[in-house]
Image (cartoon, rainbow, N blue to C red; front, side, top):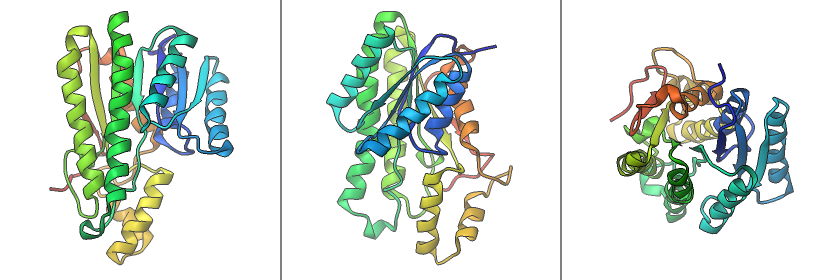
Length: 267
């Protein structure tokens, strides 16, 4: 059964190899969605990466649209939504996946840049997209939004102040949208992944190992302290996104779905 047949789905942060956004694009395409693949495109190589993902989706027999978008720029977000409406005529699902690990580091050493970028990407970017798509969802009778938060959006661990604070904000934003727009048949949920085997996770653990005085192997072992004893694959998080976006979750809204392998979060 295809859960997204002919639905129009925007996925942000979808141009990074081995990323959750890329995995989401492919899974939604497998389920029949028409996908809008977006990511930051500061140069030709980054735009090409977005195009590659869109072409891979089309190889599964669906339509796609590849757009370079800086989600921290409201005008670019609104242009992306306008281009989507022009091409497909509607927006059924928004996957706010884009994120950054810049907000990690020892608390007393965190800079304004770390806080500003974390806020701009995790909260302003998600907010801009929600504000841009919700009027279209209202006009068409409903829709679904899935935000990518984090296990660190509901609990805290060391060396993650800016990241954690803004991910808590994503969970809060999710709940407000669910409460405010439920009457429009718009559902909003978030996924809260633990350790995921992505390039961004690898980069973050290298830094964590340096701050903690441990090896990268030890950092991975620490990150994978969960009942299942391993990191999630990006496709497993994408599966949670698909569930929340689909009619299988038609009465699920305002929830933060933990995708952690039964990890025990921090404080």
